[in-house]
Length: 75
Image (cartoon, rainbow, N blue to C red; front, side, top):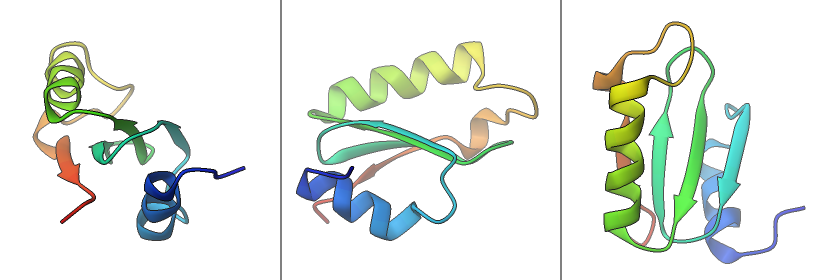
């Protein structure tokens, strides 16, 4: 069940495509590689750290780190 306004906004934006979502906050880490997924973070720094980790380790089969990005849902 979607509870926060940030999750609701993210689900409105990407929900029909997302196979996986987690977290809370206005900063989304998007990984649209093999299966579209996103996670929400309270700070841009936390989101950027997560993206950097994904870029190094991959997000699964068919991963392309160039597709990973951080999106500020408040914009």
